[in-house]
Length: 130
Image (cartoon, rainbow, N blue to C red; front, side, top):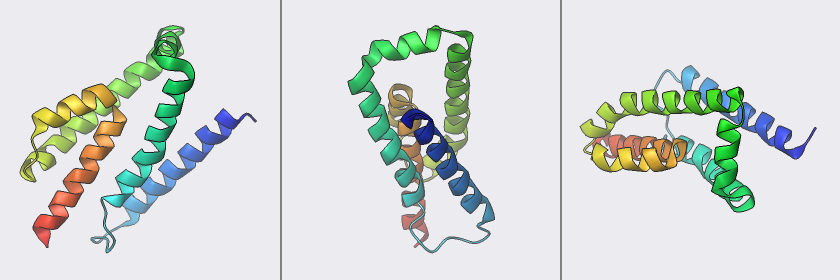
């Protein structure tokens, strides 16, 4: 098994555990909940930086349009980020965040911006509740 496959499986395991923890929480968690999306996005952003440094942006475009599966993954990612942004933006606005700024962040960084937006929204909501 290559190191890329190990990283992919580890990422899947971390995501599955995080989702299971969130779904099992019936009450408000006692720890700062904004740390969960932040803990997920930091290693992902680091891996993204590594991939860009190693392969460059042309490597991304050749992977995306090089096969039907690459295009399918790209479209799936766009659909998922768009749906998540749509669902999160009302909470963010209610917390007082400007969605115009965040839509640009999400457009240019994808999931990284979305997770940062989620962390900031949860942080502000907690500050308002206390």
